[in-house]
Amino acid sequence: MKEFPAIGTERGSMGGVTMGPRIAVILPCYNEAEAIVQTVEDFRRALPQADIYVFDNNSSDTSRELAAAAGAIVRRVTQQGKGHVVRRMFADIDADIYVMADGDATYEAQAAPAMVGAMLADNLDMVVGCRKSQEEAAYRRGHRLGNAVLTGLLKQLFGRSFTDILSGYRVFSRRFVKSFPVLSAGFEIETEISVHALELAMPVAEVTTAYAARPEGSASKLSTYRDGWRILRTIITLYRIERPVLFFGAFAAILALAGLILAEPLIVTYIQTGLVPRFPTAILVTGLMILATLSGMCGLILDTVVRGRREVRRLAYLAFRAPSDHAMRP
Figure 1 (cartoon, rainbow, N blue to C red):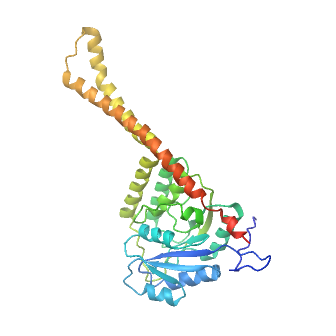
Figure 2 (cartoon, rainbow, N blue to C red):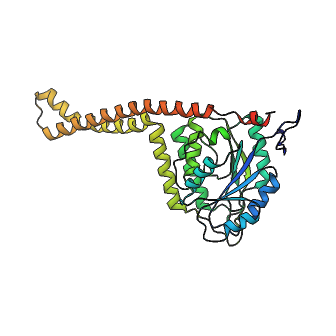
Figure 3 (cartoon, rainbow, N blue to C red):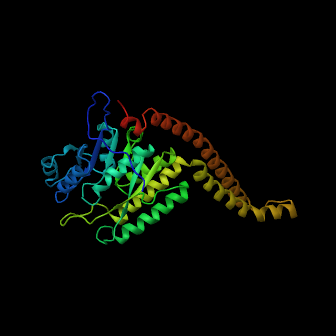
């Protein structure tokens, strides 16, 4: 079995003693009064050296008070939606390693040290906790199917993917967090995170983790159909942004093919008689070919823009040190 480097608990350094990385556990929370205390306590036991933050998203129950009483540092985000919460967490928290999970006590906190160790051992920028559960109540059939479909679609469109793109259990390096421009507002944030890692070819890994049912009285905030549609729309939007040549090229090919099919009888008639009797069809064919050309040119122009944006993101990413550099600092 592969051994990971030990995660130190020292905050300072004296003489030759090295200081370990600063670890922050960041937990989005919305009406999780039944689960937030257990979540905070589980991560406190798993990572006693970490600072635990709970970002409350307008909870109407006692989640904030319970999280604070459990020893977490509580922050409030007024803009509703998980994407807005993640944007604030990434912007406000200063750490070397970020452990993100949900506040519903479903993710295996005991797996966090191994995930952090994997990041430090191989200088990774993201470690994804792939959910595995035998409990139907923990991972509903509709969610399993939707996750499989969306994961497969992402792989088809971008050429690579993760086993579980919708997992909310992830460990990030500082250079990932501080170079990631969060644009999503809701549960599609995990998809945006996955695409960001794929597009910059970041070193990533996956660790299989247990996934438990919610505590009694706690309800899922994820809507299978509404949020599934939002995630699908996000994948298509990101594909249009990150792969403009292929996206607009597909439309150009369809328009050009339709134009050629409509033009075929016109061309045959012209060869036989030297006449073009159906002017409306000829005008339609001309319009289709013009649109096909414009669509193809848009793809080429936008591809140049995207390449420049990707280079800027890569340079922003390289401005920060690798995870193991923080672990080894004097």
